[in-house]
Amino acid sequence: MPRWRRCSTRSAGFDVQVSDTSDDWALIALQGPLAAGILESSPVTLEKPLSELRYYRIMGGSFGSHEVLIARTGYTGEDGMEIFIHSAQAESLWRALMEAGGDQLTLCGLACRDTLRLEAGMPLYGHELSRTVTPAQAGLAGVVVNAKESFVGKDTALGEKSSRVLVGLSAEGKRAPRAEYPVLDSQGAVIGEITSGALSPTLGFPIAMAFVEAAHREPGTVLAVDVRGASLPVTVTSLPFYSRKKVTS
Image (cartoon, rainbow, N blue to C red; front, side, top):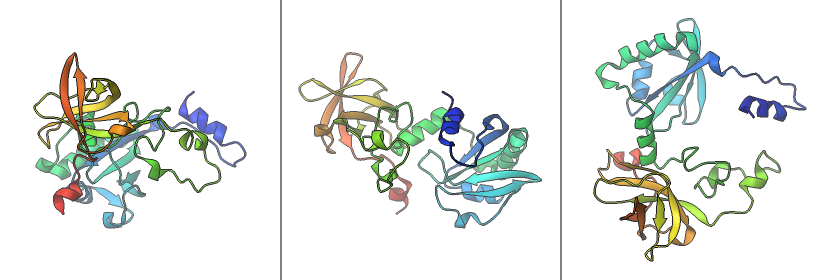
């Protein structure tokens, strides 16, 4: 069932109308430590200074005569803004941001974003998140407000927990574990599965996230990954692998 139809079922009893306007809007992600300065130097008019916009908050603005929404969000582990604008004006805004950024701004795609979010230890739907993974398993128990008497998905979110939990793994060399590779204990028994993996360009060594049996979750635990029949030694590592706060503090 499309998401907007599911929303319609949740609107029963409320004075609200639900419609799908996804195709009317475009999103441009401006990410990185210089993102705020680039946006402030662009033709985008902000309703308040970016210094007052906290992370995971949103505010309005304009680009010429066109409405924009600016969210201090992103999935890169760095500061950044996601800018929503009507699709017809998206290309003009893109060009304006590129001009404002000059040689300080680099184009990148989803593969680059995916590597950055892995370095930052951020779970991604379809990898570390799914309809069968509870928030606690993915290390996201803190985002669920358990004090509410009732909320959508409460029974699942707070129900029976799997014995597997999400951990970080690091390895030596240049060969990275990939999604769906089995994780093995010291006896060669399968105790988990890789969900995401890459050779980290920032750190210079292979990293991965995996669901493993909770008994093997402690940082420093030595495990192995079955890489097409070859055993790759890995070590359980605290998440995130990289944090800008750690680097700048």
